[in-house]
Amino acid sequence: EEDLVVLGIETSCDDTAAAVVRSDGEILSHVVYSQADLLARYGGVAPKMAEEAHSRVIDEVVQQAIEKANLTEKDLSAVAVTIGPGLSLCLRVGVQKARKIAGLFNLPIVGVHHMEAHALVARLTEKDLKFPFLALLISGGHNLLILANELGHYVQLGTSIDDAIGEAYDKTARWLGLDLRKGGGPALEELAREGDPNSVKFSTPMRQHKDCNFSYAGLKTQVRLAIESTKTDMENNPISSASSEDRRKRADIAASFQRVAVLHLEERCERAIEWALKIEPSIKHLVVSGGVASNRYVRSRLDHIVDKNGLRLVCPPPNLCTDNGVMVAWTGIEHFCLGRFDPPPPVHESEDFV
Ligand code: KG4
Ligand code: ZN
Image 1 (cartoon, rainbow, N blue to C red):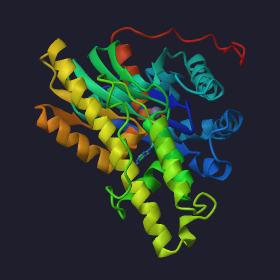
Image 2: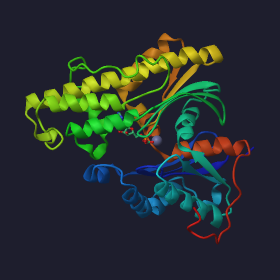
Image 3: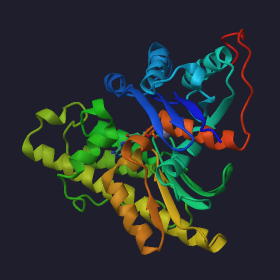
Image 4: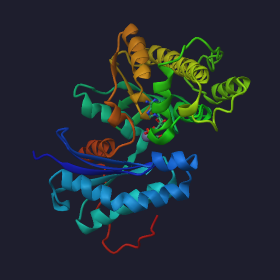
């Protein structure tokens, strides 16, 4: 049987990404254009601005993905594209592009769920990851603990009742006056290495709730109060020009925040493992994916928890944890192989169908 070759397109948030992946798991190309720079300047994702940024680069990003794979559109078997969740204005840029290519080259289309893609990309990087498995998905918009029973069959064990962990990282980084050009999460992770994680006493969220849900709004407030009590306007005074004492204070807050933010993940994961093994004793893996899973401290703490409970941690490489086209292409392949796809769209369809 011949290998499939699938183009994946991702535009749900602030990265414009495309990739070409083969059904044997070979990544033929992987292109990501990040808007982090733009966000740093304007202080957050404004949907209209993000949409315009996607529109400016989508053609180039997709063309590069196809060229770098040494292919032409004619060699593709299908086009996979993220259809949600995400900002609808942004999603539309990717969906329109996908339908245009699929229409012109008579290719089937696979609509992909962004969070499913974060989870399933682990099956590309870890060949013996079989269903059922547990997955912790941690990103800027979502916190999910799921039991993946089989392709398309997921049981939600927990979700965030307010903010996701990535949002808490991003806000904390902003309030601490960090350089956001490479993203708040990575900047905070780096600064936290200089700090004492036990110096500021933050309380761990949701301890009284014996479930697998998450909450980060309260921790965000605790961080804001801790910063206010220093009487330094950290947000408006970049850390690059802070005194060494000021810098140490910021690093201590960063490290203390990170310890508790991740401890919350650890506690929820331990409970989820306990629950899941009762329902499904054959589970062997916990997948951790989504942007925050690229964090080294997160990975090492969760590795410890998983190990202690007799499972194995599967964490894709950092550049496949953050938003990318590979995960979309791969999830497209998984669904396509089970016959789940849409026929090629008509060539002359109106551009504004969505
Ligand atoms: O999955 P993702 O790329 O996009 C969404 O689906 O939201 O996740 C983005 C989130 C952002 O909040 C970003 O700050 C966070 O992942 N992130 C990190 C790190 N790298 C990215 N958070 C903590 N440490 C990191 N190294
Ligand atoms: Zn994501």
